[in-house]
Image (cartoon, rainbow, N blue to C red; front, side):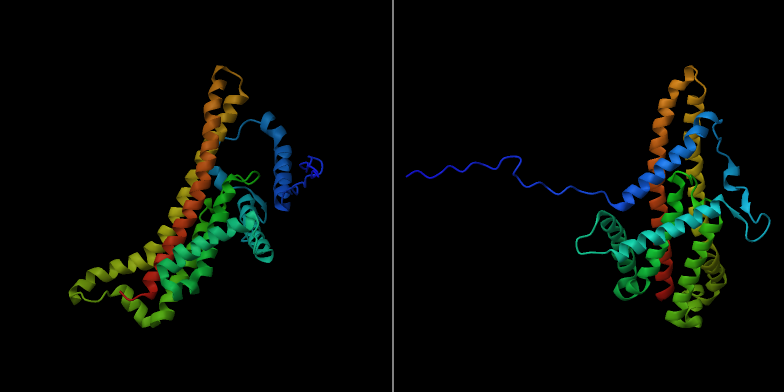
Amino acid sequence: MSTPRRHPLSAESAPKAPATRKPRWYWVCLALLVAVIAATAVPAFSDEPHQPSIDDFFEPAIFGEGTVFEFNRLTLARLIMGLLVCLVLMLVARRASLVPSRGQMAVEAVAGYIRSNVALEMLGNKNGRKFAGFIGFLFFGVLAMNIAGVLPGINIAASSVVAVPLVFAVISYATFIGAGIAKQGAGGFFRSQLFPPGLPWPIYFLITPIEFLSTFVVRPVTLTLRLLCNMISGHLLLGMTYFGTAALLHQLTALSAAGAFTGAAMFVMTAFEVFVAFLQAYIFTILSTVYIKLSIEHH
């Protein structure tokens, strides 16, 4: 007696793989991008191209002109990016799961790297755990302000004016001084910073002023200027490539063909600006961690 032949499952009866759904943030970002393109499309083709200049960093006031409450486009950019980074981190924290989404994986990868490779590696296990939250705040805060320069509708880094780098530098400055005083006491901290042990006492007349300038003046100034100058130059480079492309295409002449090269440079410089935004946030975080380490450890 022959056994019945088993026929393979037909395509209709085979189980179908569940359709993958795009996350909500994808559709929100896509809708915002379409809205920005729709709002700027007509001016982009009808108005004269905007030439980048130093005036970009001195925006006219939206309200409160001439007062301490003056609010302009750069202030709006800071507010938007501050709220955005808080919203992203809160959503990731509230919806954390054992099977992470792509957004959770990205945030956890960056946060884990900053915690393990910066905080714990440079400060040790005990102090690294203590300052990991602050170090993470510095990285994500500076990164959010930097990345605003490539977001449509903002188009300028919130850290490209001195206020934002200065605020982050002052926060870092107060933290490493406070950490040193908490660890060694006020007398022990200032003595360790200004009077390195093991030197003949006449040398301190030369060394102490240098140590004072290096620790209490140069550190916050360099933190501020390094971030500020990089973001200013990044905005101007981006502006020149976009302006050059728009100007060449706006006037249909023989030179318009060169717009292909400036257009390619436009995309290259945008990618480079994203890289610089991450790099400067990382450098700011590393230097702040080094200053904390120097403050809490005896020379």
